[in-house]
Image (cartoon, rainbow, N blue to C red):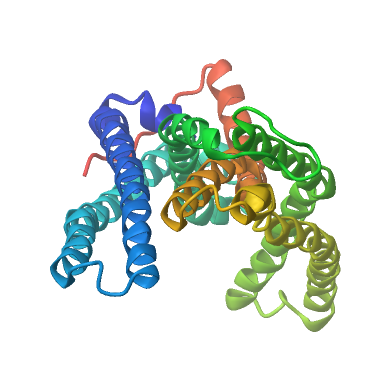
Length: 337
């Protein structure tokens, strides 16, 4: 899954240089987010001044601030579109590397249940999920690097916390505590999901295989057999739906409650009039970025569950291939394109 792309001389340029490009542009996106956070602070202060004292803000100043926003995001849009285009090619090259490796050992793995599906579908899903999770993880880490010091400094404006009192740099600690509690909660609630996803793919593969045989053989895919196989599919899906139901209850309850966390923490400061509307906007945006970064596992858990199930299926391929190579077997590489 990894060596065929990152350790293969044919794909070194795409694998390593491509990864550097993706991470570099991701860092640029984080920096743009920091610029926008500063812009919202100054813009909302301008709005507050205009609303409080009519006529105190010149029209040119207001439109000038909006123009600054357009300047920031115009280049951002172009770069993001180009990055998405590049990522699609990056993922397909990774899939190609995996496909070539598995097909070179097709005689070894063809007997595994759902072999065709694993080569045709799971390779693409694995590459796409790994790229997505990897980029989102790095973005979370980069966002912390950029916004954590900012939130640390902005926390000096918080006079006190409800029911607790004054705490230095309080918002940083609250963001960490909020994210950690959600991560632990969803990890406990969703621990059964990876196994159910894996079983789901097994029963789907068995059902699909019988239908494929039935296309060429009148004796296959008969009503009794397909009813039984589809019954396994239905049973596993219903179990999956049930477990996802209480997982979603926990997930969405937690995510909606955390919307109020910075507003609760800022309550005494807002009511005392110690900060401006623009500064409040900066603080809440910075808090959201920091908290969301610490919540990486919360947001990524359903995708991680899918990745685990795909990984288990492809791992079965590789274990058979490694056993074949240890016994002295020689692969049959595909012709170069």
